Amino acid sequence: MAASSTGTASPGLRTTFVNYARLVKYQFVLDFCLALIVAWTALDAGAKYSGETFLVLLTFILGQIGVLSAVMSLDDVTGIRDGSDSANYLHGDQTRLRPLSRKPLLTGALSVSHAARFGYLSIAWGVVWWTVTVFLAPHAALWTILVTVLLLTASVQYSWGLKLSYRGFGEILLLLCPAAFVVAPYGFLTGTLPPVVAVAALVFGFGQLMIGAYSNTNDIEGDAAVGRRTVAVVTSPRGNRVFLGCATAANLLVILVPAVAGWVPWWLPVVLAPVMVLRVRQYGSFLQNGNALLARSRGVVAFRTTVVCVIVANLIHFGL
Image: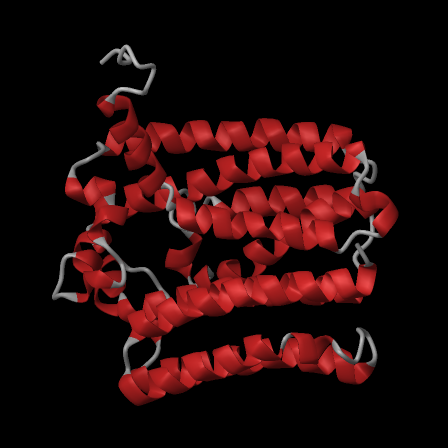
């Protein structure tokens, strides 16, 4: 449908854009892109405002959007083909905390073939822009390139290709891939990885793990039916609660141990105290009410609080 005489986009174009934005879970893509702000605020004051820095960050985030769009799109393609999304989203009345509108393949708003094609094009887009990043980066060290290649190849195969989340690697990817979104651009810009940035990256990664792990807890039945081997599927309910408790404790220890050991500033746990409180609340409330989707929602709040606290800590430590 052509654009109207007022110059606004046609309803068909707007609807298509909205459907693809829902397919890629644009809210979570934006959350992942906050990794670039974490990395940028960890730069020395002299490097923060250089044109080279902004150019590298721009090309990296363009590639990141492509990679994340591919991950989300192909995850939905797999979910609709094996029936796991139908089982996980169309049962009971639990979709209030995860609206069905987030799944345009389930609602019929998009076709599977269009979503798959979009996913493949998104991979290509990500590869192109991350290749540009390598050539523009002032410190394209081998380890940084390897981190980026691993990030690309592992993340897009979460539910597609090798289907790593079906083989027991889902929780590892949920932790390490988000962390790598902090490590890679910082490495391209500095060639180093100081302990305080490594901690920031891991805390960022735990933010996503502690969302995904509770999602998996809610999706046990559907995941088990299609052979997705999450911790929640392969363990008993008690075993899964133990895992969630250990992951929560590990998140806290990543903040506390480096400070006690003197690897990072002593005050870092003070700045990140809101994160620790929210993380304990998330797990404690789940033990009380067993509501995995509510715990997941609280995990989103904890993640975004994590980003704010880490940015504040970086600005204190590295300066404006």
